[in-house]
Amino acid sequence: MTQPSTLHRLIYCSRQLAETRDWDDHVETVLAVSIRNNRRDGLTGLLLCHGGWFVQALEGPASAVSATYGRILVDPRHHSPQVLVSSPATERAFPQWSMCARRLSPLNAAVIGLLRAGAPFDPRGLDGDDALALLSAVGDLQVAVAA
Ligand code: FAD
Image 1 (tube, rainbow, N blue to C red):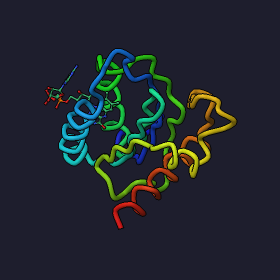
Image 2: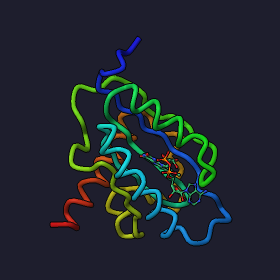
Image 3: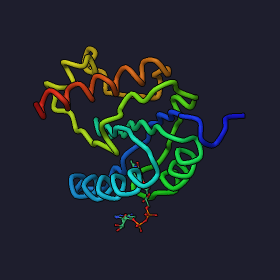
Image 4: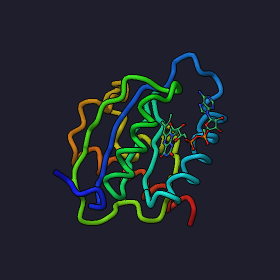
């Protein structure tokens, strides 16, 4: 069993609420609370919002990842969560962000290779390596935009 202080990475995807109209406001609120809490709890990560989906990486002490995911699971702003990765990690993939939220334009999505023959984005089929590669590519995009 993983020790509570061991570095752990969890990546999950979930559906944004279809009826929620003003997502920018919601994501801003989620981000503000996440940055505050994650800084306190030693967590880092990235939240991708794309095509009606959230894909989020959380990394940090196993006990903090577990407690935070427990709160996220019962958040009514999304549904149908599915864990894509949950494993010990040797190092953080997103050390620079307590949390960073990124929405992709169609051009961003094309660059990252998410637009495949017009098929809608569906992260549920991603294996652990692909999920991490996707969020790492989104992180690289975020760094490039901020530079
Ligand atoms: P509080 O200090 O009470 O903060 C809760 C805040 O969220 C308040 O500002 C409240 O107004 C607002 N809020 C709660 N529910 C709703 C709602 N239904 N509609 C609008 N506003 C609402 N939390 C983290 O700590 N770290 C994360 O990385 C993280 N990632 C998230 C990713 C997603 C996709 C979602 C949907 C939520 C995420 N959250 C995250 C938020 C999490 O679900 C909890 O709301 C939050 O952790 C509660 O924090 P708190 O106990 O400090 O409560």
